[in-house]
Amino acid sequence: MSTIHYTLLCDGSSDRMLLPILDWLLYQHSPEHAVESAWADLGRLPRPPKSLPDKIKATLDIYSPCDILFIHRDAEKEAYAARLNEITTVIEQLETPPVICVIPVRMQEAWLLFDEAAIRRAAGNPNGRNPLIITSMKSIETLPDPKELLFTLIRESSGLRGARLKKLNLHQRAFIVSQAIADFSPLRSLNAFCALEEQVKRTLTAKGMIA
Image (tube, rainbow, N blue to C red; front, top):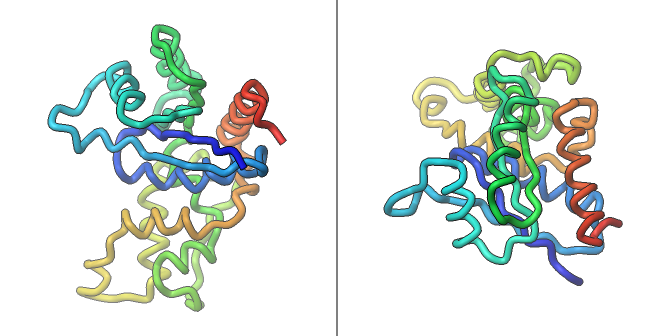
């Protein structure tokens, strides 16, 4: 079995939660290949690169082999097209492996809000019965602060109170939510996720790796 090696370049450690989503997409469309992922932890370098071109160069120097480079930017308050243009303008000036842009609207945490069972497991209380208000898929991309909503759901589902609740590592638990989700297909109702999946399919087809 041959292997797809990919690297995720993003802004911070919390963005690692995208790795299970990218793994799932690759397995969906190229199940006959194994998948090996790497997160570009450039912050550990003595002099971390600042600009996107320098980050890309450092990532490709350090993380090899790299069949596909995923570059993540949240849309936040910008339009999806504007974020996409930021990345593609830089890529056009560099020699890189195939690049896929990962641009959730508004933040990547929005892509974890649909699975109540995964949130409860990540919070350490899988059998909790307190009601959680889970956002409908129709409105996920319009939420002003998906990260804070995910953190709130983790807190509420944990069943913890007082000092124990304050000690709950919300960033770590959010990453566990992404690991606990087995099926990301509900995200196919979101335009930004569909755009990501189309890029994955085109890239795998071009590399002769499509199922």
